Each structure stands twice: as structure tokens, then as C-alpha cells.
Length: 125
Image 1 (tube, rainbow, N blue to C red):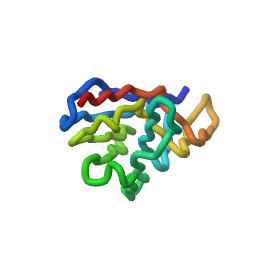
Image 2: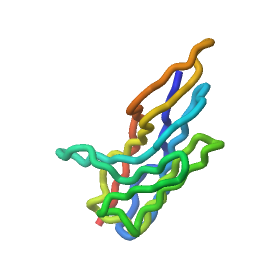
Image 3: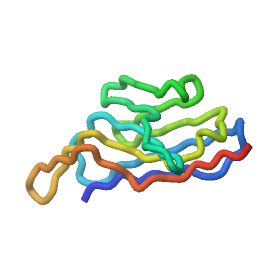
Image 4: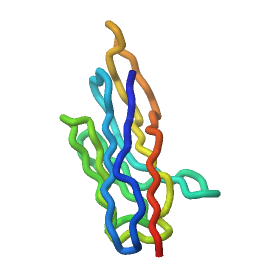
């Protein structure tokens, strides 16, 4: 009933740019923080960037100055603009919402730590 759908991944050369989007669908009342995480082969999932509903932002040190997270609350969409990409940015990028409140039938329901399906980003050297 609630989905996070990522798009925008792909293959790019080092130094290039990509823009990821994550749209939340469903009868959503509110979403607290949204963010992007990534998981490279053989590694644990790690934080990339998060943004709260009032616009507070946090970046991982490895992407600060190169990536920009933004959010359109009316569209229930979060974006990640990735510039100056490096081969070490190669990973599956996952969208996350830490708390979603939505309608299901006539009831409010809540989801915590909700994830999208992921989108592959590959940066060639």
C-alpha cells in the first residue's frame, strides 16, 4: 500500500553526474526523514545523506561537497544529485523513509525504517 520507488541509476564515467529520485506512493499523510543509503558488493549498507521534513540535512563525509540531497514534500519525493562521481561510489543506492504515516482503508497506519528496492549506480574509471 506504500511504496518507495527509486529511479535514475545507471552507468557513468568517473567525473560524471547522475540524479537519483525516490517517489513515495500511497495514501500518505506524512513522512519524517528521508534518505539515501548505498551498499557496495561485499560491504555493509552505509548512509549517504538524509533530509528531514523541515529540511535538516546530513551527509556522509565521503560525499560531502559532491552530492546534494533535496526534497519536494508536495510530491513526496527525495532527490540525490551526484556530481564528480568516483569508482568507489559504485553501489546499489537505496531510498529510506524512517517514519511514514498513511491511510489504509479508514485507519491510520505507520511504517518505520521503510526501504525502496534500490537502483544500481556504476562508475567506470
